[in-house]
Amino acid sequence: MRIGTKVIHVGEEPNLKEGGYGDVVVPIHLSTTYARKKLDVPTAGYEYSRTGNVTRHALEKRLASLENARYALAFASGMAAETTLLLSLLQQGDHVVAFDDLYGGTRRLFNQVLTYFGVSFSYVDARNPQNVKDAMEKNTKLIWLETPTNPMMRLCDIEAIAKIAKEEDVLTVVDNTFMSPIFQSPMNLGADIVVHSTTKYLGGHSDVVGGAVIVSDDDIHERIKFNQNAVGAVPSPFDCYLVLRGSKTLAIRMREHERNALRIATFLEEHPSILNVHYPGLRSHPQYELARKQMTGFGGMLSIELAGDIKNARRFLEELQFFFLAESLGGVESLVEHPATMTHASIPLSEREFLGISDSLVRLSVGIEDVDDLIEDLDRALQLAF
Image (cartoon, rainbow, N blue to C red; front, side, top):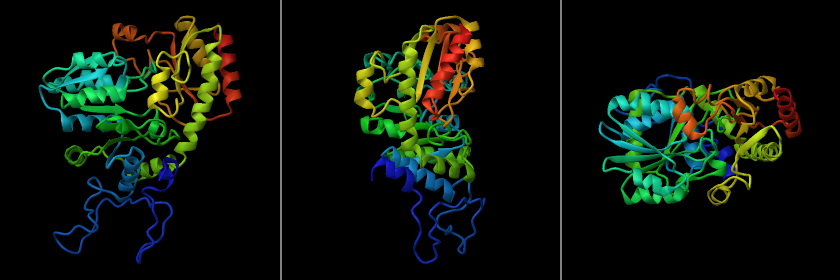
């Protein structure tokens, strides 16, 4: 089954057996508990909705299929997914090597939460796999990657880094939120675990918050599944239904996101008020060839560096009409945000400057509106800002 079919059918196969209703859309199972006839035999394996829910399992089945994995575990948010994953696999004294350009919330979790539990982190420029290898220590248990990164759109070679990790018996985790399973398959490249904020492209409509951890290893799955229940940061059945519904159009949405983003990136690259455009689909991107090698598309995310300062950036952001000034990404509507004061504000100024997250950097989540309207909106706002 190809992925464009998987996003519609997996997890929602109609039950046409005797006693089934033939539902084409999986029902929203709101019951918090499940009755049983025999004391020691849960009905259909279900006991309590935190432990297992029919609608959630339909979503988990689909997510696992999309990432070519055996298992998926759904959570109440992307951060809940990351936290439960790390609490399941790490203990005091363990060490993690991470890409230095990460979502601000992930770095906040690492630096301001997990360090208090005795876990240490080393941040490296993972564009060079050798930097990852050099940063590994005897107690390194895990490598954490985003590719492309948030917000600088930098790439790392998943296959090369996963090979290094396997040689040292270290796990490789890839946050695949930006590309979605449509454009990138980390597990096919050797990653052990994939994480998603299902709030973003998988949901696709800015109306549900969720996360997922996707694995194939039996032992890792059981450890995370235990804590999914024990910690309890699970999504509601309605949230699972919304991600299931949103994911049905994932393949066609991602194609439109990419088509619009490439047009916009090309336009902005020639604009006199723009210093740099960070988009892996441009030939000017320093890792364009790697993008073509490990991705089947370039996605809908890009970052731009304005020629002015924070005053110009503020005016530009506030003058946009169709790009809503808001955090998050991956919805059908276009969004714009200012990483230095919004999504990455928790990162110290010195680290932001080192990474290139300046006051003139702006991140765009390109939606699926008419691209000519979007380009006119950007051009008008830039003219007013300068």
